[in-house]
Image (cartoon, rainbow, N blue to C red; front, side, top):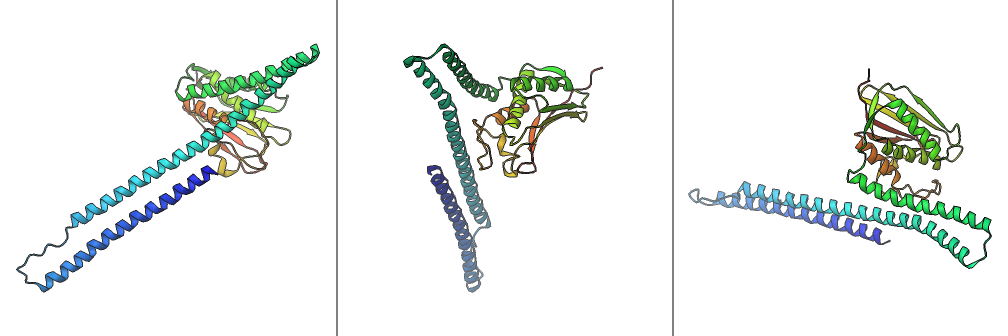
Length: 317
């Protein structure tokens, strides 16, 4: 509610400022024109020997430039204010998401520990608790590592272990590793490659990007998931398409989903936990490979296709 009120105040202030400078501009033009007409009328009635100085056009132009300059400064000020508002809003969303992600496993750990401390728990139950506690600890560890890795990524301290790989072999290994890491059932992910090019890549960093994309395809599939990964090249670029049969992404969100902390809030979206960092992290990794990532979706329940484009290296041999 406070954020909405703040945005309303910014809009009102911006409108008032625009009315003020437009009014100032109108008054300035009115003053110049009025004085010009008066001087013309006076000069025609007085003796031609009397030198009547009409208003200087340079003064008029200077006034216009000054007023326009004020308008530009106001525009820059309000633009920066709006950006700060959006960043503050994203920060609030991030804090809420991270707090939820931290609170859930911590509450679970607290419950297990209290149960084990104050109640007589069998050895078998104790082992089950320890297994669940380990999962919660790993979840916390992954969240903290994600935040730290993104910080390193933004400071360009990651994606440094570059090596040359044949594109087909590299992405085949990455996909196989993702299937293992995410416990994907056999037959869900299908891979095909027609590329003959090589690429320069940090394999560990690209693995994170592929994991995020395959993981999202699984999370946002309303029915039995089916994921197709295709790799091809046009001689200069290697093109990787990761397509799914999931719930799709509305047109208005297709660019925003790569923004930091952004998450789609809609009634049709499944209740998937997260911080809004996965796709941002993926985008930054691809960017540091001098590539780009985009998404296209035809609409609700029509799936999505994420496209990664990275530079190709001349074929070996």
